[in-house]
Amino acid sequence: MNKATKVFIVEDEIIAAESLTIDLQKLGYQVVGRANTKEKAIAKIKETEPNLVLMDIKIKGEEDGINTAQTLQNIASIPVIYLTAYADSETLKRATKTSPYGYLVKPYKIDDLNSTINIALQKYQEIQETKKQLNQYQEKLNYATKYDDVTKLPNQLSLVENFNAILEVFYQQLIYDSELEKNNIPQIIPVFYLNFNSFHLIRDQFGQELGNMLLKALVKRLQANLSEDAILARLQGDDFALIIPPIISKQEAIDLAKKILKNGTHPFIYKEQEIYINFNIGISFYPLQGENIDQLLYKAKQAVQELSKFGENQYQTYSPTLHQGVASLRDDL
Image (cartoon, rainbow, N blue to C red; front, side):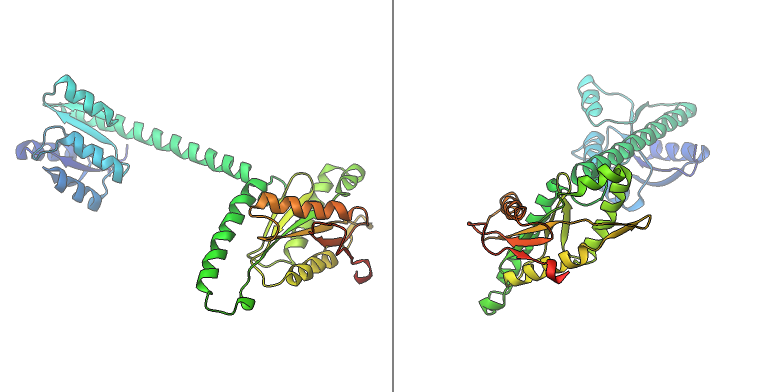
């Protein structure tokens, strides 16, 4: 038991408060303050930050110790032990609803005071540890539901939140830049769909472990071509989504697609063997082809699926016809 535990006393009887202070000091506790009303107690508890509060149920003022404990719960996590010489069943029922860490009946024995405090502090530590474990579990669960386990990239669920955040900044910036010439204001947000359709062949040939290693290396290679504020996410299978900040013209998105294809298709070397990872890119634009990320991903995916007729390592922007604007980069690589 840590005898440096800081204790605060809420007691309206001066003699009782003084006697309690002496007993606590005999036991090695540090009494950091005393108060006899709710207002004084809350203010001093905020100031002294005790580890434990001994709260008399009957104190001065319109609100008793139970009301004080309820208010305290809203501003701090501090265990409370109630002190009471007498209390009717209704009062005790009210007190129980505040989840106290113990009761001490006055007059008390000093051994009872010590054991009640020890039990309360142990109970408090156990509850805090349980809360900590639950929070850690919840954080892991939240991470698992929003991030891909292999690449650590956001998944499609997290992508929705990220896209909505981009939209919020996008419209705030439009309002801020409303006085500028319209042609100089970024007004479209590109969404890229990257399809690595042949990646499963690599796993079939070299195994899942190497496949995952190459996938991680591929992510690093892709990220090397992106700005820090770009959002790269892994979708189902070996498909990726990419969102970049708002741009002025579609050509900026096309230039980025060319760059990604040019720098992303160099072979990986494994045991002196070259491993090629080929892919296609489809591009859609907010708000031209959709108002939410699901619509935009669907349109970008349509563009990618159309590209499968023409080979790999190509890009295409979405259009209703899906047969126009196909651009092969094989000559550029």
